[in-house]
Amino acid sequence: MSSPYRLHFPPNFFLDKNNADKILRLAEFGGRICSYDVLETSIIDIKKAYNFYKRYVHLIPEEMVYHSKIAEGVFKTDFGNGESIISNYNKTPFNYKGTQVPAKDFIIVK
Image (tube, rainbow, N blue to C red; front, side, top):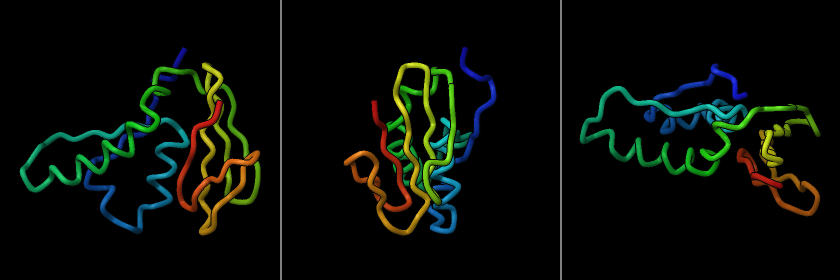
């Protein structure tokens, strides 16, 4: 069963470069974006947040079964469907089993 507790951040949160690690943590733990108001000026923010979110949205209903640190600044989150998110908080890319994880980004592996 999926946890009822989720991280939520408003779309304008994605514009602040100082939030890079917090944004990455959103994916690492399967967090959702939320927006309580939609103004014409916020459409770009919402689109940017959605583009980030849609990379892992299919994992939201999945149970998070394991979370571990696999290297300094790199974490692996395993989900019930057999997929994992590899989150790289470092300023340099990380090689995970032959697949490059970009700096300050994540990948999904099976």
